[in-house]
Image (cartoon, rainbow, N blue to C red; front, top):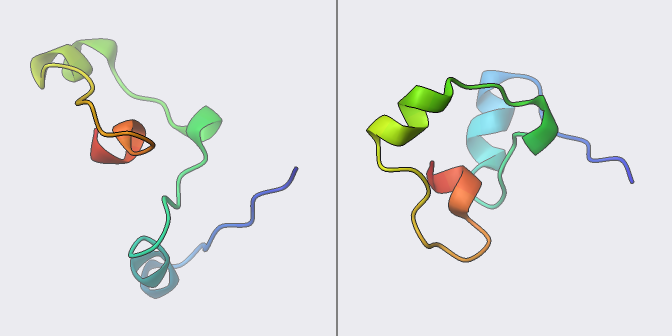
Amino acid sequence: MEKIVPEYSEEINEYLKKRNPMNHPTVIYKRNKVFEVKGYEDYQYFEDYYL
């Protein structure tokens, strides 16, 4: 399955009103930063987006 997401700022701003524009496998972050903000909140289907 291919997920096509916007590439430019204005398109991204519109897209994120409805969906998460980040493909999860392409996002890299520091583990300790996630722990600093107490990890994931319990938001069904939006845990990654909220983080």
